[in-house]
Structures are given as structure tokens and as C-alpha cells.
Image 1: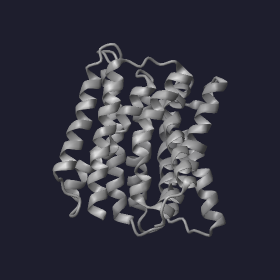
Image 2: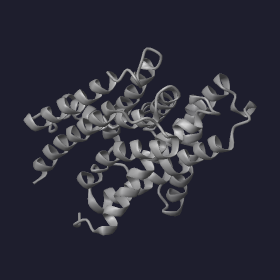
Image 3: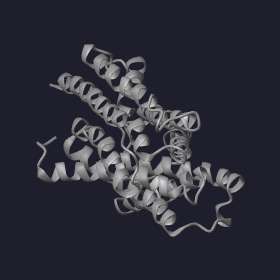
Length: 295
């Protein structure tokens, strides 16, 4: 991997902005669409740029190969479940809170990796990071102005969505030798297949008359926040490696909070700021431990 250049940092910032912008767009999408429809349209539109890339690069899609059950399982856990849970939760919770709750993914993955991998065990620095990060989330839940008995469960569902990403990441290790584009294309195909009957029976989106802003947001979520963002992530991973790419974790909750304020005028309380700082500090300690292990 080469030393990061200005362009690499620019691309990392763009990736963080794209992923952070997903949260307020999910909020706008919920004005017209149900959570299952949002999940379906995200994977459907998200599959388009990924599958086009595979076609032009002659990358074989193995969605229906002998490993189809892995793709189907990862598609459900890594895409269907979190996309649904986040959309369901954001309907009742501010999108800036969702950005902070979802940013716990590196912390949760560190805990899961300790139990399910051989070389990702806890050390003192990681433990401190996890404790600081999750203390910020506990503090966030004490913000009675933004999280109360009416949306407490919704906030927990968003947190569960972040855990689904982590479990999906662990399952992806089972097929880690395959090309990233193939894996992403295959799980997007299976996520679409899984969601077609669900969206047809539960929400019947063809009967909707959606608002223009909701329609734009849900298309953006699919094409940009899902499809193009994953392709950009591939580029950064190949060029600069996982440690560099993982720095996006610091930026997503920060950008998510700022964008939610700009576009939705969402309230930013003192507890939101403290929780945001705690999560970012926690991620820093976890990433620092990973970096030290690689040098």
C-alpha cells in the first residue's frame, strides 16, 4: 500500500460525507415510504452501479454458485435487516442520533472479533476505547429531550442495525478470498430477492403517491449511499488498505450530525455533543490499538 496523498484524503472525506448523508435522506424517505420499501429500493438501486462495474470488468457474479447460501445469509444480515431497522428507527428518532448510534459499529466489531477470531483479542487500549465509546451511547440514551418512552425502542433498533453490520462482516470472512465486487454484487442480488416478496405482501409500494423529495432521497440512498459508496470504498481499500479506510469511522457521526442540522434543522443538545465526542474517542483508541499491531 502506498502512502496516502491529498487525493486519497479527499476520497476518504467524500466517502464519509456520502455515508453520513444517508441518515437525513432516510429520514426524508420515511415521509412517503415504509421501512421495507426503503430497504428494497436501497438494495435495488444500489445493485445497479456494482453490477455494471462487474460487467465491464468481466467479474463473475457467483450469487447462484455453490456458496449461494453464504451470499443469501450475508445479504439478509448485512443489508436487509439493518436497512429495515435503521429506516424503522429513523422514523421516530432524529437522524443525527442514528448517525451516532450507527457509528458504534467499529466498537461492536472489536467485541465480536475477540470471541470469533484468533488474532483480534482485547488489549488494554481496546478495552479503554470500547468503554469510552459505549459510555457515550449510554449517556445519549439519558437525553430525555430526544429519547423518551415513545422512541426508546426505535433507538435500540438502530443500535441493533449496527450490530447486524458487524455480524454480516464476520460472516463475510467465510468468503473473504473472493473479489469484493463479486461479494457485494451477489449479496445485493440476494437482498433484492429476499425483499421482493416482503415488500409486496407488507407494504405494496405501487399503491403509494410519494413526495418528490422522498423519491429523490430513496434513489440517492440506493445509487449513491449504497452502490457508488461501496465502489469508492473498494478503491480506497485497494489503494491505501483497511487501516486508512477505517478512518472514515471518525468522520461519519460528525458529518451526520452537521448535515442533519443543515438539512433538517435537527436539535443538537449538550448530551448529543458529549456522546459524539465519546464515541469518536472510543473509536480512536480501538483504531490506535489496531494500528500499533500492524507496525
